[in-house]
Amino acid sequence: MNKRQIYRMRAPASGREALAAAEPGTIYLDRETGEGMEPVAMVLPLAPSASALPRTPDNLRACRRCDQLIGLDVSDCPYCGLRQEALDGG
Ligand SMILES: [Zn+2]
Image (cartoon, rainbow, N blue to C red; front, side, top):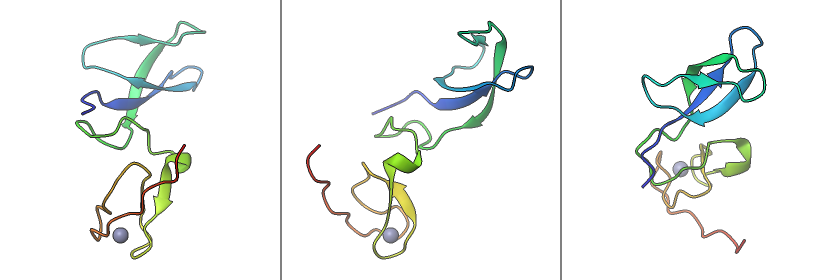
């Protein structure tokens, strides 16, 4: 079970963004510029979740029945409940 929520962090001055498992009350600095970064959005899936994979297009597939985008590592469609096929090895 993944309990750490991933956030999209942004440095206001430069607009640089990064993904990080942020926790409230902690200051995050851009590794290269040293700017303070602010959380601007939570990244799906919301913690706690069985998955730690960010929901990037690479990690998504469309459900055969309802066409909603769901995580590759999700075994049942969260929208219509359809059991998803096992992924080929790899
Ligand atoms: Zn579905």
